[in-house]
Image 1: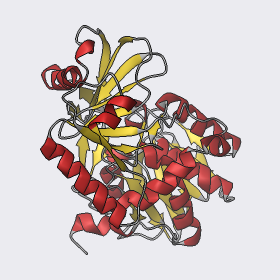
Image 2 (image 1 turned 60 degrees about the vertical axis):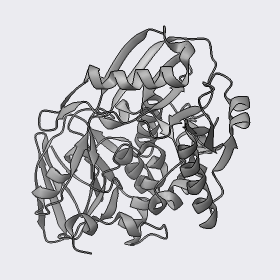
Image 3 (image 1 turned 30 degrees about the vertical axis):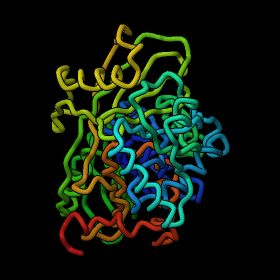
Image 4 (image 1 turned 30 degrees about the horizontal axis):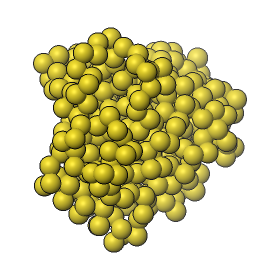
Length: 372
């Protein structure tokens, strides 16, 4: 197989799909190469929280724009992706924790952002009656929520196909070479050529960059998740425990989805990850602390996935430092799901215009190379 395109996207996770979709809508001929299958790794392993709450201020501006896009997702991909905006809360169990949340809220307001607000203990109990009385207050983002990751992957994939994106699965990049203005991408399924290449390879993004002669430090995460038996609906919001590795929501089917960043083990080269049950038990205990009535609920399954992690936990959205026509969008470090719609728009800006009006000054690759 030999195929020529305007842009080759390497990586079939949601950020790769979003980039391909937006580029196709701007008239580009796009080919997307995925080593496994679409959405195989981080995108299908996520808890799918759609969160601006407690975002790093350096990415908050684009996160807020992305949230607006989530609220009109059906117009973007023909499906709302199961998104429901019932709010997210970061819950404090001590007065010290509550004071830290209040300081965060005050700083957010001082910067001109108004998407978060404080809840007193009384307001919190009125909003989430099932919470333990030990919870003394919270910070609340009412426009936040959660979505269905598999429905989101399906919708973005279908939209890409409808826009003429060529999607090739089981296509492993083996070499990346530039001749003149054209990138030659050699794979197990043939050679692909384009003047522009987007590196959306997730945990394997550093390996892809290395093929072009660019060394980028990149770690990985193996965040674990729990799903329980189905329960009668009682919790529309997403709950995070402040100072704990805990996020907690009830899926549309009734099961509880429990995560929060507790780490399993992963072998990136082998594309395998494993659950650490002793560590995962901490998340289960945290749920019982906040919702004591759930102590007898049965766990039905658990899993972990592999995702890229940068040193400062911020993504890379930038051009290559060594080669013209190579672009990066990776390293979302466990909080990239909410940024999916805006990341595609930004990549289309960068590739088509060479610049973007969005504030991505803190997301450059040079910060990881100590070149700033």
